[in-house]
Image (cartoon, rainbow, N blue to C red; front, side):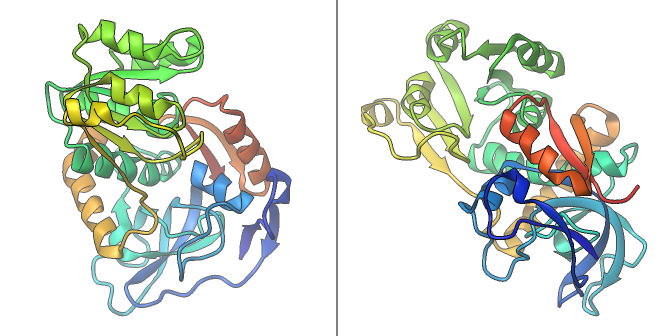
Length: 327
């Protein structure tokens, strides 16, 4: 099969098309003939050498795909050859074929293309488990998500709004702010021109927000604590800035704040399967009704993965960046 090799790692130009053996399904797995694969920040980190795959995972980049099931292990009963699915993968998505645990597959939502469906798993799994499971967001609460124009950000805005929260976000320019407001954000704060702590205080009458989803880190951590309400929750899912900071923990005590975080990739097959079941039950109907939708910014041929990574690193995109493996 054709796949994208990143060699020993480095800048985006290490990404090269290569030929290798197609995977065979192991116990509990299916193999997907990939039509589209999503590009995500963890792919960039893995390519650069700072985010190695977990033990046993494919060394090939790519955490989400959509396509047709081409093979199933003997013990898999819920899927059959020919089924169209999207899936969260442990790795291996930048390839013509990808092996995936069967419980991590989901049907293509009615009305969505394979391209759109391939942009769902990584973001929707991540947002569901961190905003609704770990973050315990409820209707009537206030929610702040940083990086609102990213795939994670746009997913979080839409889902939080659909489940009855008031949603605020931070973005880097006016175009991104306008897009986030159109897709559901009640307010979009341009962090280059405004202090989000002051803006949140004004928006909430100095109460603060109930939940913050952050992937920035660095100085944002202390600012997030200042922006939380009593019994507020801060969920950390990544660090675009340093993870080591000098921090005043007093607000955690005074406001009884919960500061937590998680990563998705190392979780067990069973844990990810549970998230998939929740998505199918609670979120797939929203996708099929059009209340929530994936946002695709750009699609590149698989051989041009380098260009996709360069766009990701530029942060000029609004929404998902995709790779077309086959139409």
